[in-house]
Length: 441
Ligand SMILES: Cc1cc2nc3c(=O)[nH]c(=O)nc-3n(C[C@H](O)[C@H](O)[C@H](O)COP(=O)(O)OP(=O)(O)OC[C@H]3O[C@@H](n4cnc5c(N)ncnc54)[C@H](O)[C@@H]3O)c2cc1C
Image (cartoon, rainbow, N blue to C red; front, side, top):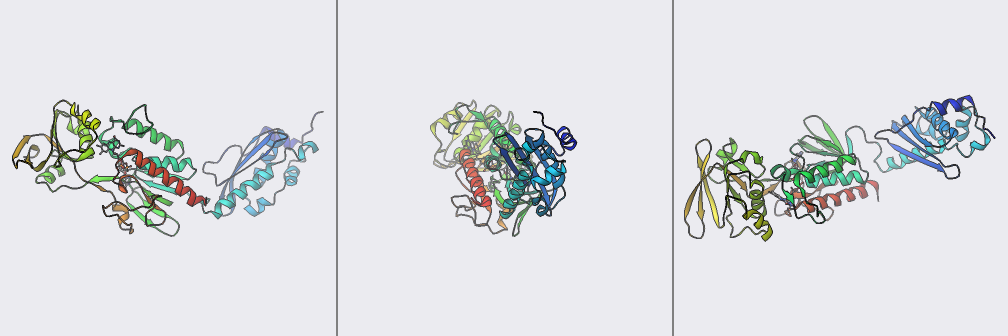
């Protein structure tokens, strides 16, 4: 038995209107008929309660496609209330009728439209639908390990997310040690370099539709609905803000340091470009893991390295020590204080004092790298009244929430536990907490 279709049905089947998907759709409605196997999806863009754009994707027979196409034509430009009144019969009438056998089986387009409107209204009630251009559910400041992990996970759970970094994606470690093998990341048995880990985190975030903005955030304000972020090129708004701005070396008052640091004279703080140290005789001064890792990162680049700490030991695991000990041209001094850096326009020597003997010694040099105390980058949110802990880190609860509603802090800005895996874990906690709060789960 052949089925007789009207000319209009044939036309909409052969030339369907409004096929496809809407980027940043405000709502989606899906219906299916398991008997016929027809599946329909309708997406809406709504402005001021009016359907400004509507698109469909349908898997099914000629009637299913024609009714989908027709319902988009009828609904376009209508208010949501008017669109809710469109019935299956209206669609069939506009098409010049449908064969009786198709009337109940393949005429689901009005149902898909109603489902999309229901989805829109539900989202609106939860306050997440009407996000305009440059408006987000989550904004992340800082594209180091902490920030990138947050962005990837926040987008993964479906939150509209933007991340900013005006420096180097991958943060502190990727700037200083791009070729360092990450060896203390549980489960990563196939070791990656910092550069590879950064790329992988960036691919993850962008693959999940995070918007990545290569700019510094210069200012933040908070109003009732949004955190408002200003960059050189514009303004962005977000319901939730994640501060992942990391930490920076504190300024040193050692004699001569400021003179040579301020004019590229050969004194560098931790966050330097390692290529500046190529074939130089370098003194690395600092404590613990940062000092040891810094020496490790410039091993093979610098002509020689003198690694100095004012503490009795570097207090790092033996295996970290072993990696550094084998660097050619490396000398280590403990319980030794850097007293002064001397030279003309460039660094020429360092004056050190052995604390046990009280003896002074001088070392001829081309550069000094300071891996001393790190301080959290809190300039942006200090003025908003965020609370710090006794060590100067942003104070958070177990969900990484600060005392400011909807503002989180993670990674080195919030914790002295200086590990990539911890920074990333904190980002993951934030993404799930933000999801629960924004979606009311
Ligand atoms: C020498 C060295 C070696 C290390 N080696 C290891 C290791 O092997 N394994 C390990 O687990 N950990 C290691 N760490 C620790 C690791 O680097 C940190 O845990 C990690 O960098 C913390 O990440 P973060 O995202 O909190 O901060 P960061 O990496 O500092 O990233 C912060 C980012 O925020 C950006 N930013 C700041 N302010 C703004 C703003 N206003 N607008 C936009 N962007 C902004 C910065 O440009 C930066 O990219 C090492 C650290 C050092 C110093």
